[in-house]
Length: 252
Image (cartoon, rainbow, N blue to C red; front, side, top):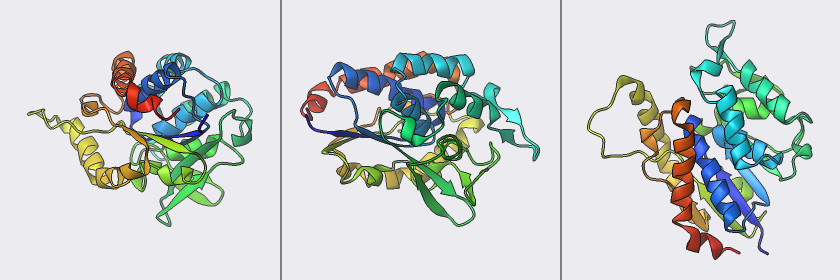
């Protein structure tokens, strides 16, 4: 059987659509042999690589409000701390190394001082994961190995290059499509849409590197921190991926 690499974009609570895609892939008899993720995609990729099922990860995310403001704690500098998220990682992945995972994982973060992409796939797991998911202006940056880390999506929200030459086929999943149907934008959506418009060109410029690209078209109707729609988000990802079943199954 051909080896499959899986790329998981960032997207906050929208990342729960990755769980629906993973579930659809399993039903098609496909399990990735390697995963590359950033931000929410890195967190979900880590839990999946640690042996958790998509439904188990949904339960973890909803029980801990993993992508919700209610999971955040004020830090010393006045912005939120990632302590709750770190505790969740260590609870469900107690052997805190990349090497402990059953599926190889590559995590992308941004060194905000030097403006460089940082890629991790060996050693301590939790700190790169926290850095990769560290949303600017929301969380305190993560200090790790001499770098000051923020969200990997700042410079690369679709880290497909990490898989090139490491697998036979690549499935890419982007959960940040921006709907043009809406006529009314609330202020809380302005920053979200502006950020994803800014990074979308880079994401879509790399679609050709994937054998299958999964891009549910109405993701912007879900907020980045809106866990109230967790089940609906996962189901939307699942239904869209099921619609690509014939294309996906060709990879086997």
